Length: 452
Image (tube, rainbow, N blue to C red):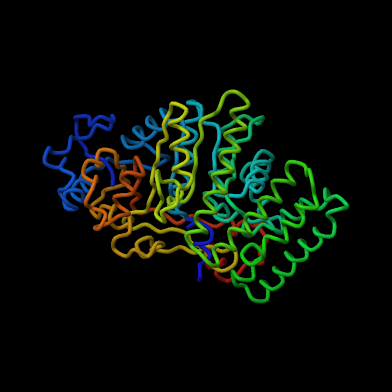
């Protein structure tokens, strides 16, 4: 089974009525007509409601407008805010940074992101040292990979999140596996390896070096260490290295489980998604337990691909982070607010190109889940939109109770799994940090072209 690079990284990875009368959620929207409350009324009424149920959000000089004000208020009242995104859109990163800043005064001080634990930790340390430039410098270290955070607007988002929280607090929670950063993580282990684990560690280091040598000769995913090696090469180090320090333990567990996730992907797509989701959920549980022991759990924002942030089973029928967060919030007497952020008419987004490059593509032509005209970016967009739009999905749930699954199950799942949506009009593809002068500019022609 072949899985492309984006699938391996992220696949595991609408708006409101303008009016004067509230619909129970403080959106200032009109009530749906009584006959539309019939759950068996079919897709036509739901589509009509989706097209009319919209309020505007502006991004000139930062987010503003009635849509923004409503989103901020709902997020402030929640204990968790989840941003489920289509990756590679500049406005989404800018929106996320502004939202975290607006919510900080309401108790939000942690940001969970789609990076492995140690890479997120070291990016935060770099940002503390020198802001955005510190992150750029860190990503230029040989063997380091920031994946989508090698996009400029995404790196700016991380720098802004770190600067919003006092220096004595750890802001960034990396919850994901590691695909490309094995050389860097292995190098961090070397100084602490005990004598009894030296032999197995040497085999691990050689396996990584040999895989990257093969990849340099033939740059395919199958030649990457993180996608091709047996987790046993790390398990042997863990078995010989009893009682490692905390950071070394995290690195070893990350390497071992990342290889196990990739091994599963080679034979079973659902099991891959399930195992990756469980790793992320375990990491989040550990973070939440640590905060609970400190006595005053903070509010948390999470920003991941939209497959991971949905309430309930995700689009591959796996219970991912979004399902877990919703239940944790309920158990603690709070709630989670799930925001879907997608490109709409005339938008572009950055996708992975050769090597560490990114290329800009039309969002209308991008079909990650291969669902054609039924994909969310087509069904939820408004071709007559005059600007960016926001939708309160909760007002539409009476129209999507039963009977529509055969029409478009992803739309029905989305209406119940997300509370709100932001649909961009004319969004821009994020730009690459590879353009910076101090990067490792052994870059491909594709990167140079994208920078131009």
